[in-house]
Length: 232
Image (cartoon, rainbow, N blue to C red; front, side):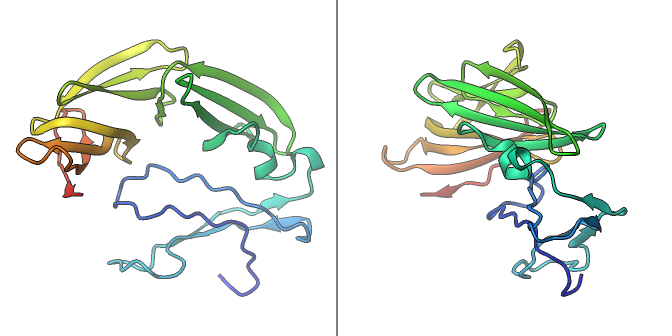
């Protein structure tokens, strides 16, 4: 890296535990005054050096080949214009045969409907295809392009249901937190190794009813768990 390099994007992942992010989506915006040409793309993690690491020498990654940069159509030029539409939030992207697929979602809490939209954009910035579908519940997209939703059961059970984009149920499993009397605010994530991450709050048996404990569980294929919780 040198003083001639141009900043084209910045990704703030927040305070996340080690190994819990399977992939981080980042968009770049090439400055309008940047001349057309061939450039390397460089990614640097922990740019401010705030995180103390055992190995500080593996935070920089660069493309092995140069990337062509040229002006595209005004109406679809740039990452933000291509994917930020109608209240959708981008949660994933992939490149397939020279085309770029941007995966977006939005949730309507009133109707309890999750809507997904996949935009396919050509290498020249032209929108070549759109796929839209909806699921009648709040779901979390997974890396295998299926979806997971969590339902709280009484008094200490979380039901997990995996569905595909057509809404077909692939499996339903239950997970018990034996010490809980109330479970609330459950959210789902996916670890880099494929484990399902459950986060939320619960009241523990023997504690006052207004006391909540925070929970983070890594649920593997064998449904084993390693809790990391704290008093709130």
